[in-house]
Amino acid sequence: MSNQEILFRLESTLLARKDAEAGSSYVASLYAKGLDAVLKKVGEEATEAILAAKSDDAVHLTKEAADLLFHTMVMLAAKNVPLADVLAELERREGTSGLDEKKSRQG
Image 1 (cartoon, rainbow, N blue to C red):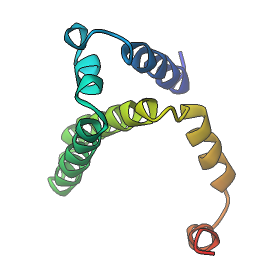
Image 2: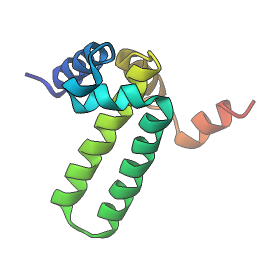
Image 3: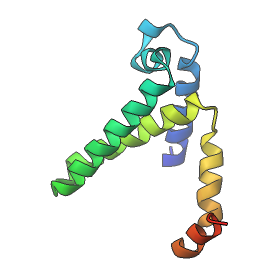
Image 4: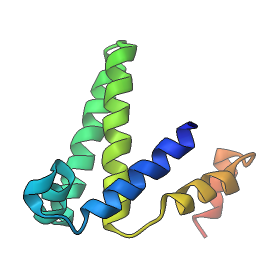
């Protein structure tokens, strides 16, 4: 199984949980609380990942980065943005200077 397959399986699970009873899973309960709760969780996980990066503990950073990616995917599912669209955008940017890509968004 490839890493990409894992992400698409996770996306499928997250989408299925959007319509589940709030008490049936953590993700379903997060969706039931609304978009602001999802966004708050993404922010919390981003902060935790930053703090982990400052700690020089690669295992801790790996776990926090996984939490951030997971909750970012929850956010994408909440907003009906397919993971494939995000991956396509990353592919589009591949080989483009970050400075040039950023400049292209400012116009």
